[in-house]
Length: 508
Image (cartoon, rainbow, N blue to C red; front, top):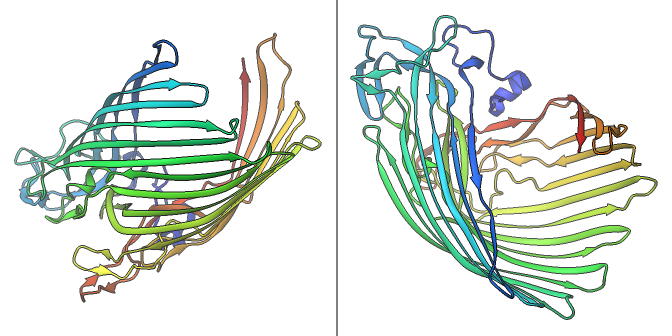
C-alpha cells in the first residue's frame, strides 16, 4: 500500500513519498515492517420455502471470520516509556539502556460475526407485502505486539516486548455488538402497473460494548444501547412507455465507527492518549429526498435533484501516530449537515458499433454547527463539508462489433476541502483510461477466449485522488472561547500511476 502524505510531503516528494528500501538502522518506514494481511472465511445457506398460495419464506443464516495481522514500524523507548498512563523504568531485558528501540508493531486483530436474515412474502397480483427480521452478533479483539527489529531489518515474531512482565502495547481492545432489526415493506402496483408505490419501516436495536484494558484508560469500558427507526417511501409513475418520473424519501443511520469512538488509544512515549473518544456517541441519522425523471429510447437520459439532512454527522479521520507508521482512527462529531444538488446522465444506443455516455453532478454542502475541538469550538457553521467536490463529471465511449471492442473513460473531479475550516484543499484533476481487446476464436463449443489491453491514467499525471484523513483546521487558531486550537495535518490518497495491463481471459 502507498504511504499517505500530508500536503507538505506531497508538495516536497510527490509520488516518491512512500515506504522505503533498502533498510537503514532506525527507519520505521522500511517497507518490510509495514505489511497488511487479511484472512477471511465465510459461509451462508439460502433457504426459500413455499408455504402455500401467495406465501414464501426466506431464511439465510451466515457466518464470517476475519483476522490479520496489520504490521507497522515504530520506535519505543527502552527507558521511561509508558503503557497507557503507567510509566515503566526499563523494558524487560534492557535495564541500564536509554535509547529508542526500532520495533515492528504487529496487530493480531480478529473479528467474527454471525447471524440470520428472515423474510416472509405475501404476494398477490398487485401487492407484495414483506415482513423481515435480522439478527447478528459480532465481536472484535485487537492488541499490539512489539517485536525488535534486527540489524538487517529482519523480525522474528517471538517474545514481544514487555515491561515488568506487562505487554508493551498502545491498546488492548475487546468490542462486541448485538443487533436486532425488524420491519415490513409493501409494494403496491396501480393504474395498470404504471404507478408503483413502495413503503416500509424498519426498527433497529443495537447493543454495543467496548473495553480497553491498558492501564489508566478513561473510559475503560463503554456500553451503549440504541433504538433507531428508519421509514422510507419510494414512488414511480410511468408517464409513457419511454418516460418515467420518480420520488424517493428515505432514512438511514450510521453508528460510530470502530473502537476509537468509544475508548482511547495510547503511544509509548507519553501518558496522554493519541486518540480521545468524543463526548457525543449518538448514531448519525440521515433523511434524504430525491425527485427525478428518466427517458429510455434511442437516447437514455435522467435528471434528478436531491436534498439530504444529517444529524450527529460523524467524520472518520486517519492520522499517523508520531514516530511510527501506525494509522490511528478518530471520530469528529460535526453536528448537523445539509446537502443538496443535481445529477444528470445521458447515454446513446450503439451507432455503427459506437455508443457514448455522459454524466455530471453539482453538489452543495453546508455544516450546521460549530465543531468541538475538545477544549473549545471552531466557527465551522456555514462551511462546506470536507471531501465533497462541488462538480464531478464523466465521459465514456464504447465500441463493440462482436469481434473488436474498446472503452474510453474521461473523469473530472473538482477540488475538495480537507479541513472543516475550509483552509486547505486538494486541486481538481482529470484522468483518462483506455481499454481495447479482441475476441479470439472459440475453443471447442464452450470456451470463448478474449485478449484485453488496459491503459490506466493515460496522461501519467501525478495527483491526489482523495482524503485519507480529515482535519479540523490547517492553521493554528483561537477558538470561540479564546482557547488555542492546534493545526491538523490531513493525509491524502495518491492517485494511480500510469499502468499498462494485458489480460487473457475466457468465458465457458
